[in-house]
Length: 352
Image (cartoon, rainbow, N blue to C red):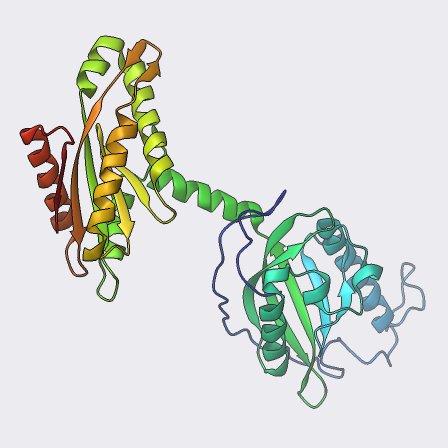
């Protein structure tokens, strides 16, 4: 019932990224008057006015029939766990989502029967904590299904106290939010990505750079790249060729970056490479990366209007924690223009 986000690589129903477990207090169950804490009564009274529909059924029996019908027909995922976290109830919606019949999971710990492997230890620990407390929690966790897929589920967990007020069961009501989270991630991606090249857009670039330069962080290496000759390609071969070239440049540059590096397109024919965590000692490797970027970008391009070629001028800067994003980008930009003016063969200029 608890845990982290759905791992992005899971198929066919996985979703991304891990989230920290967060709980929020939920009011404890209140025992009903005249009965146990989890039921409307003790079943000792009969219907005051039996009707043709219920005959001589007692009020408790009628309530049980209603509860059974609700659990069978609701689209909400409903489970009941005992004090040890073992499944005592697994409704039809749970069966339909996971492909597991109730008989296959009842009596087993929910973490071993349904929770994905990398969340099991945390799930067991959190269930034990919630089951021992007077209040429940809302949480997100990942369940597996019998077909190899995973589902991110938002749970509302409520402990049921016995007559002495001690929790002895947990009622868990959940909703599958896998598609909702995917949609949220898609919206975030659209808002932070340059549509043409798939790189970070200007706003996302500033956000990433600002985070990398927070006090306590190690700093960030920057490569400010400006294409040489792009306007000629765009004018002579057409805008479709220009767009294709920009997309291919981004693809080639990403191909020489290492894990953790970020590529942004702040606009036009400019690209910025960010290497979060790079300190002053990283300058030599950033120079090597700049030379590699120049080499791969300078290869010819097969474009809709014909073959095109461009060069690239690169300014290298190592920004230190506390330095502002505008200041860091400005320094890299100035070094890039210095390299362009000098028109050195390598067209790479570096600083700090």
